[in-house]
Image 1 (cartoon, each protein chain N blue to C red):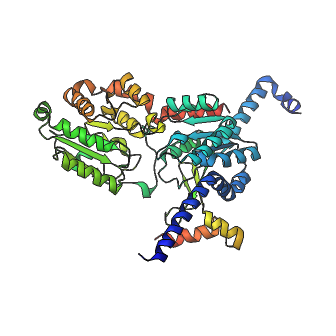
Image 2 (image 1 turned 60 degrees about the vertical axis):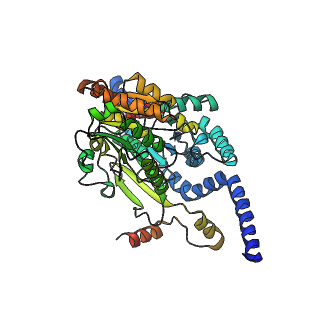
Image 3 (image 1 turned 45 degrees about the horizontal axis):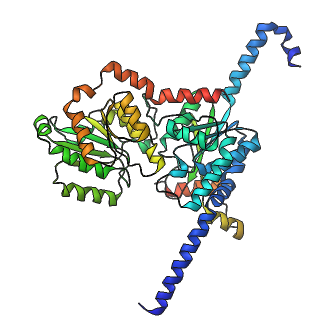
Length: 118
Length: 357
């Protein structure tokens, strides 16, 4: 099927199409980084994520949100998206057993962040 | 104390210790399960091509997501997890070993911070040689968020008002337990008494510690400072933004990188402070830990001393300070070192490894 599509382009044309496809693939490649901390000053993680983002990867860093840290739930910096979720064991047990709200519920986290933000 | 409160205390004690032991047994399982509840679905819904785990706790989660999305798995071991400080209780250590044994062979790339740790991981888990990325700072810093910026702080010597005839030695990184800072204070106090040094540097030694402090350690350091006759001046300097550190410490005369081989992770360690000093162009006085010592000797960066001997520390310091012209680096040499050790060189390795995935 692909060979049939590429025939009118000739041999070098096919190579060109493949090169473009490969480049597009790198650009669209998604990298999910998982860091079990708040990733505010974990500079090694930040440096790695920024390096990958600069060379065309789509990078997201999944890290932890805690009450009182005054950090946004979602932020973008130098091409990297940081997504923070609350990792609270007690909250999770309450959620499972007593039907309390899910601790890393985005709306709830955003509200709490807004309350904390002066 | 009444009998009831005594009984209560005993009950609490036993319960606490039992609970602690029990929780230790299930520590990894708890962490893994709860992390998976929080992150797994969200990450899997994004459908990544590569999942990159930092720290052992995140490894099982990353492996599960990678399996689910048919993605590649990358693991970055920031230190030797099984031999970290404070030493892990054996129940947790067993779990960490089990975790690494299970998941490290599954990772497509394993990244770590030093060649010694890479060798250890390769031999212990029979995996391909991990990629080594040093913890070095950037040559050309990228912008950082406003909350991390430290404005109006550009020059360490100027900020501390250290006179030009004094020798300013800097330690970057947190002032906390088991970093060997206490030994440095003793060693430097001994060196300050040296008549030759006094003649060369009339302003004496100024020891600046840039970073967060633990009050108990500060107290201990101040007590030692008093005990050794206040021969040097101590400065506890609040931390500086990570993208400013090189320019900030450039005006110091030398850097000290102490260390105690307390656990294997420390013995093999290649700390940030070493690379910060290299890029800032400072001569280094370093403890003779396995890999650090080799690097310092190979590139003629400074002097090493026996980690637990403060007299050797004083000797190494005097060697650097009294023969300063030998250890000072010229512009060409500095440019070479920058090319070799800056983060830009490290990230190239990471990107090559990634593009081969």
